[in-house]
Length: 405
Ligand code: CTP
Image (cartoon, rainbow, N blue to C red):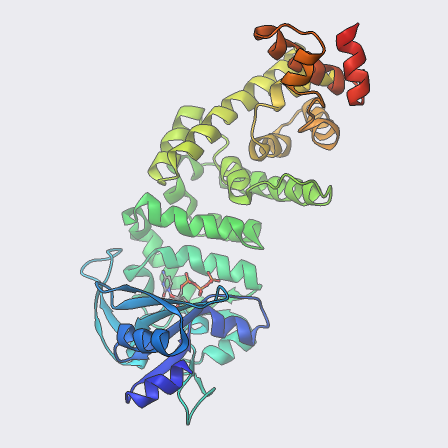
């Protein structure tokens, strides 16, 4: 329908980007990107009027988002040519043909298009050998300045390679090495670098992706301290992946955010203040950054407490008290990274049997049972949780008995 409307105005519309690649690979992808050789916003307006969809236009970029009645979403853009005023800068944009639009993209596998207009509907436009590269599993750039224009593509190459089990081709690999030798990734803002790093850490094959980055000498752009200990960093991320796999098979309700676990592990050797600075540089939301840094400190204190004997791993209440205040991500990260079997076992037991334990009685239940209003109620609530954790009470009834006694 979109293609039909475009054709009526003498324009051509194309499905482009990751969706075309993923259809060919039989992979799930719900991002629908359409490029128009013509005015994207006008086309979007006509479509929205005709079919009762909503349109959000960004006049400045000449792009629009179409929102359908059942949650559908189509991103519309005018085909464009980009100029990069200097390496790693954000591009300046002007209107152009579909060919120029595809040529500015990162890899051949992402530069395929499908025609959407009436007569040629469904025809694959493969101007740069993308189909063959998908078949052969090759990540290949379209031109030799690709990584100079946009060094985040180095992280993208590592991600696609790991996620799709593809290989970066030899020439593209040389171009990456050149860009790294020229220190071009150092010019990226922390925000842009981290955005791609986060996608990589969330992707299937995160460990292989990080290993590739380490091999390319890219980790030092994530943090200079990683240059000296590449292998250690990769091993920690690998251990994190294994702990996440273990956790998934417990089928627990609380779901960890994968990138937080793996990023914390990548940067585990940094003192907490430096970790905080790094997260700020990445423009991680400050609430998240504070939480991660604070939890990182609490994790250290817990580990030291177990190693020093202040907390016995077999004492559920002691372990619970420490770990219940730490986010799941950092608890899992500590489990992956600790060199101490007692710490690992205490965490394993805690996660399987103790995390999230609550008492059954509420504050008002306690008052009904005769506990005086005020701080006494809070103390009782805590006492009941501890009794639960120790296995001394197992039901609301048993909690009541404990209070009445
Ligand atoms: N792109 C690019 N250079 C970048 C980022 C994106 O050329 N640094 C292009 C790619 O051709 C990509 C398209 O913009 O196909 C859309 O980008 P994005 O949605 O980030 O990637 P997808 O390819 O859709 O991959 P995925 O959805 O799996 O992340």
